[in-house]
Amino acid sequence: MARKQNIQEVNVEVNILVKTLTKRKGYLPIGGGALNADYTFVDAVANVCTLMGNAGYTYGKDFIWAYHGYNNDMEDTVTLYVKDEKIRTWLHLKAKCDYDIKHTSDGGVKLTRIAR
Image 1 (tube, rainbow, N blue to C red):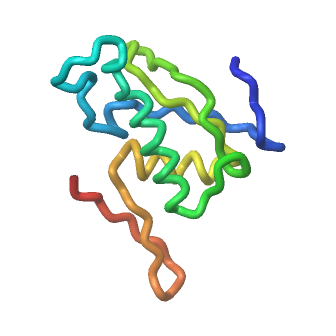
Image 2: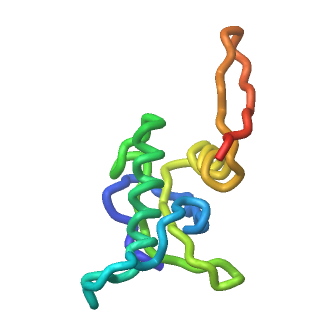
């Protein structure tokens, strides 16, 4: 298992499929040889970190990117270490299932499907 650095109490691991985080093609349709490498995974990491930041979570405090993983079907995943189960649940709803959490004025919670 990778090192768990920068977060004092990391105890939850989250795996998210790369294909749910980015639509970037593997390679650009131009020359460039090795400089035109597959940056799809890097784009996915950037997108999930931006998603977390926009939701108010802080990199190094609430979550960190851990490593490039794979699921049981050998599909690429972004693996994060998060501070608690609440963040894992939020990520599951937002990144994996295309739902957004809306808070109502009376203190309730409403799940809405994200149109993609």
